Amino acid sequence: MNRHLLAVAVLATLLVSVMSEFDFYKLSLQWPPSVCNTGKRCIPDIPNKFTIHGLWPQYDIDTPVPPYNEDPSCISITPKSSEEAMEQLRFIQGELTEYWPNLLTKNDERNDQDFWRREWEKHGMCSNYPHDPFGYFHGTVSLTAEYNPLKAILIISFASLLQPVIGIQPGDERHKVGTILEAVKQNLGAYPQIACNTRPRNRDPRQIPQLWEIRFCFNRADPPSVLRDCPNKLAGACSTETDLISFPPKPS
Image (cartoon, rainbow, N blue to C red; front, top):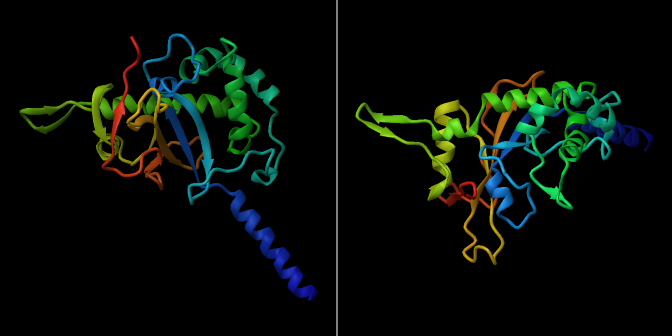
């Protein structure tokens, strides 16, 4: 009986150890018009470019690593607190405000640090950077600048020497999810994950899915730099690659 209990305990320890080692990062970039046309209260002048939602450690089965406060076994050391993280970020606050803004307001007040603090507590503490919030946030901004979704899907390609094909751009036209996936694959070499949302039914009775986020997957590294195909190409309100989705422009 004791041997059986010991075997169970050892197996449980091994499982925890295996699950604690994450496999890849997911860089999630959100399209502000699709965030803010859903009834949420947003900052007055929303950006006309993809902004950072977060850099998320993921297991190979494409499940997120739980936050440190839920499962401290994700790392073997105590990470920097959110207060310590915010102190380090004061050196790059300007670029974070540009690339990683808090699109949502509370009581009509903008608070970017609330957003950064949540992302650090939820994802950064269990990343490769538990003692280096500066490296985590600055590295994420650098990745975003390099892998700009608008460049990946707006770039002009050539079906032949005489027939340029203009890429996907914000507007009234709807696009197949698969077309967006293939545009990114063609230009960056790996499939992303496309996440869609819908506007409230009172704003859009047809509930047409819209492009909400493009998520890039990277092999685990310090810093992450090598793109890989995302395990799941679709998320949210996208159900198939043949779905027609909108890519709403910034409100005028």
